[in-house]
Length: 484
Image 1: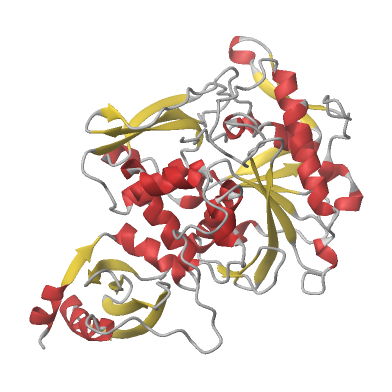
Image 2 (image 1 turned 180 degrees about the horizontal axis):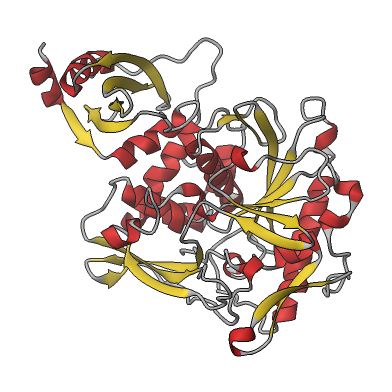
């Protein structure tokens, strides 16, 4: 059949939707120097493909993907160059084989469990919110595609995600999406650590962990808990102790001594769910504990500035020593990776931007941006529709998974992590006794709330921003993306 007749079976889809599918590719949706010229889907969504344009040569290529019987995407063909997009599309329509059944499982590959089929342990309120409310359909689609893209989820992933460890597993999906988005080869060939990320000869093992406490469900829905009113308590008190206990507990497992990890960079990735809503305000306690420096603001008017005040111990009830990165016994820990954006709000926005938009659903993201003007200590307000041109213009490629990802580098690390291994993260490092940061993003969100509306009416109960203190320079990346 001619390209004209065959393409009637195909639907043009957005670049962002294809990029979400392309998280299943070994290096994610990264085709440098080429970029996506157009993307397509066919039938009931079991086949997809794109045409790529190399701006240096003006040549076109195509890439075709099909779902297996367990719904995972696999690449089935790619070819080129072609002189015109029509010629590439003509070949793509054949390669996608829209009328064929799903691809079989390769020999020895276990069929992936269905993420949405409830098991004998039941389901949590968080899972029910994700799967039964129309205003979270974008998040459901994004979560599903990220799960299907995981190289090798462990046997308990689905049951954990459906029940009490929903937030922990969502954090793993978030990390994976951040890594693949940046072109990293992500492997899950061992039970632990959770991920091995590789790119251009550099590599790092990463174990994900969440700071939990007495909650019946880690990161669950419940009565909102606000930040401690006392700033010292928020920086060096119980929130910092929770980070310390969680990180030290993981370090006792000696991942760096495993045969497949020895002699390579190793990092812990942490998210905070120690209380309902704690992710909104606890972030600033983490660098305080890691570097043993409390950020204080001194001076008045134009003389105001932030200074790092050394501390020996945290002020919680256990008086834990501060400065994990000051202890040479932990030099095997290359870095601590952090984000408080592993939330339904983040997945909802990314699914919405990819094109899954229930009729009548509106998303408004309201928050504050870090002001990078020299000496500035006050943030910049923003209040924008997620699908607006103004919102997307905040970043060169629109909102990305990794914009809220932070890497705190250990100055004593035996095996440091190169900055360009995770280029989209904000990197914190010590230089001449000061803690500095490096980021590719001109606009960094300090805190935000994503408001959902269906036909002009609130779809969820949104929580207020906690803005008691202006951010000091090493406190300025708190993303209040908690969406219940």
